Image (cartoon, rainbow over all chains, first blue to last red; front, side, top):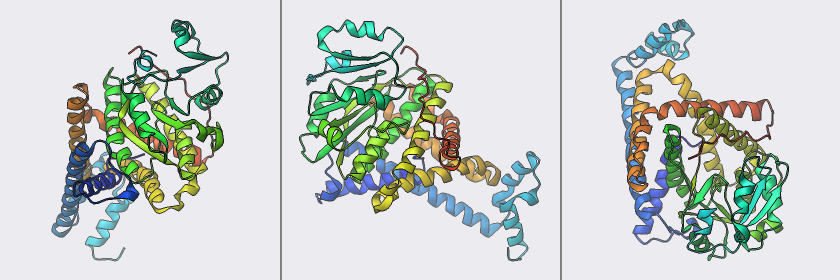
Length: 107
Length: 318
């Protein structure tokens, strides 16, 4: 099941690399020749690589920033959702991980 | 039939397999007279690969194109396929599939096809490992089937089974975006779910059957991307809302942006605006797909309940 995630990113990179090599006139015999859709493939894959890479960097920076500021901040909404559906927070693995990190104990 | 007969490169033979149809198919086919050959199977075989096996005996050409009864071909289909076969190393060719417009569900499918063909399939063809030759747009050298392949009827997705076999035997499969088939996809949610069950169920069956193919790095990478990421993605789709709503929100924003770009591209490329709305409700379809992917994985792999009965296609008159 190809998803809008790593598969899409890897495939976009493959198309981008292949298209770039082709534009530069570098032969990639083993990978087969580009016959159709060079411009479209190049444009779409470039956009996807940019967007997905941007998403990953942004998401990671959100995690790191929130982790530095307050280890609880990132999970606040998650906790709210959990308590809303009536689950005990202590049951929640990620919450436990965070709680123990904050109190300084080793999990 | 009309689309087959109006090709720029006329097919040498058009063979229709009337697999136990109970509608007016036989009567309509008779109207085409001697322009087509019809093989009538009185009782439905219940599986497309059985019907194809019966038809193969009557194929006279050195290359045959396989397509479906609910599909029409673009006028250049045969010409584009023939061009690919000029390369003697090419054993099979996969064309491109597009969904005929009808309602929101077929628009969703149009988006899925656009992503799977223009990104996934294109990249796979560059990596020399095309995952699947579309059942509605596949072409093969006849000798392949007569000398190297057998119909085994032990999976729900015969097109995937053939493609795995060709990859295992080291045959080269080409992909062309010039040969386009327009197919009628399910227009009702029940039919859509049945089709996804067949596709994903057949996918898991074939993965177990052809697991040895993962012995080569590129193929292992591709299968990992499809199945391992598929599993992780599907599980996280349902778990993520309970872990981190910020991430969940960001994920859907990114998802809608990527889908919107593809939808805009389809709107220009295929001149259809109905797909522009799809990114907004595609998350709903994505949840259905993920649920079925997991459900079929559990049934086929963990519980070993192998289903080989085709779900009755649910079609409307598009």
